[in-house]
Image (cartoon, rainbow over all chains, first blue to last red; front, side, top):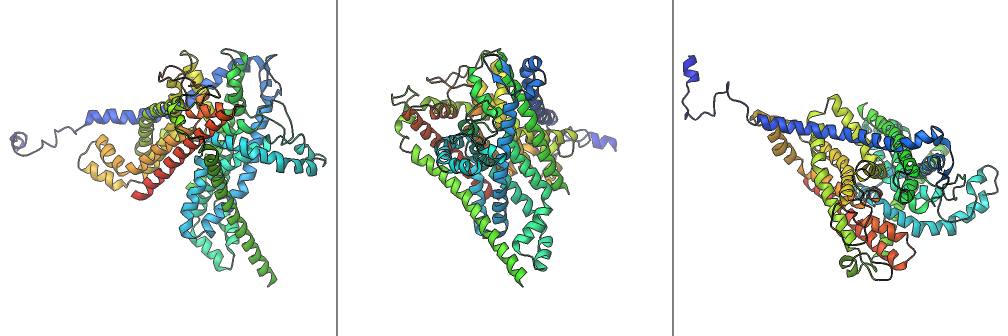
Length: 328
Length: 277
């Protein structure tokens, strides 16, 4: 019996003995799976390398200034006294302005796209809003610098300075000459840039609301807006907070659009209209003047490292919130 | 019944405002495009495509910047696409449940939204500084790092849409793994993967910040990848901030060129995807 099985004729039309035949492509498979793993791990290593190189590059600045670097308001290339406070403040403040402006718009557009717009218009309008995210950031910079800034200087800033400037405390936000640029203009332009991201994630979340929940609310007589406010939004709350965090994270690292309009002054000022700086704009702006091996270059790399840490925390938090909603 | 009237009015008001917001968003897009056409089109002469960047007042063009951009983007795609494709496949095929898969997916999401200027700074510290200066290679590497997470993300999403039964059928026929992935899974998802690649080209084409510290920019003709290299976004940045009218006009022409290409790639990629759905 064994003999008949093993002594099979060579040309019998069989591909081979199923017990002894090796699976085809075993070596190729090893190489292929190795490649898959290799590239997967490469992505991990890449992020690690970015963090490590920024930290190593900024180390001399951290060594020189210690943790004081974080809250020193000075940025003086002449005396080589560098601190990150002005830029950290500018980065966070301008990003928050962007989110505050973009948030109500996103809420409205998401409401429009999920509840109001006729079915046939939803996709084209949704795509058009998404195209705002595709416009390169340098284009936003030019548009902001040549179009928005003059409009701000002529029509927005002077009345605000006149009306709100004299109010104690609040007035501090509306001081100085109407130059057109500054924190508010930067925030406004970034709001347009992050709007598509927040809106897209809002729509995605709102569409995942179980129809049964919404129909029950309609059944007891709720209006469209009441269903949106009391059913759909609370249902997707966690992911929507995550979407806002993603918008914040994007705004924190925005470079070109901000560099054009923020004025690039490394002075601390409470006014929304005064020239300021963000970490990203400072790096873009001062890098060409930083000599290799200088303390200034080290300080710029240290700024980069700080920006990375801030972005990482915000983006990680955003992802955690968005994913936790998807799971439940 | 007055409370019902109040609720209905409120509902109506919110609907009007929301529609208004959507109109505002569309208006902004149209406004930006209109500005680009209005200022860019008159400056978009044949000079732009046939002449180098020249000093102000010399009727220069953007040829070296366009060629430099194409070369750097091309090389970035050659580097970034396979890595992204394989890493995305790893996440979809091997990393669905494994711990390494979860971490890699997390890291990729961070890379996707991380400030692009930091990628430029990283490449500066990693390649430019230790290896003798600014170069087209460094610019391409920086762009590749931006391309990878886009490709990884779309590849994974698209592969996840491929029915498991298709893979199992192929395995049941005795096909080795590499054949199943390349000839069945990738084929089934090729439109989606293509979309991701087109989107990543669009992203690389518009990025300015990472090129500032890597390929630097170059005002004369150079196709040498190991020397500083011109690129369209850098030329726009340099020209838009200058006090010379003809340079600013050229910057608008370049801006129009870049935006139209990027939007075109975006629209095409959506069409590719929706046609196969």
